[in-house]
Length: 123
Image (cartoon, rainbow, N blue to C red):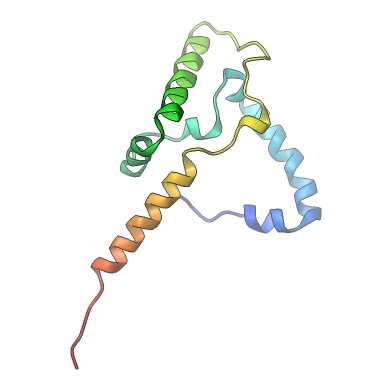
């Protein structure tokens, strides 16, 4: 699911971070998901088994909030309206809540695959 990322490289260099962060904020605002009250992790497709497992591991409150955001965004989309500014997702509220769980599951799967392919030889 996860691919290579330049984010750690960019965030370690202040001059590059100062140049890229405003562009990243502009891009996130231009995509429009925040105007519908969604977070970035709400856009992750659910068809993957890893994501399904991560959704099952979400705390009940976070799972309820996710379903509420998705339903509210769907209703706003059907009505061809954006949410009022007070209900839109603010950049400081748009924090990952599902991605860390997905990364944890991917690490578990990798460890399981490594252990399953372990060969023990006697001398």
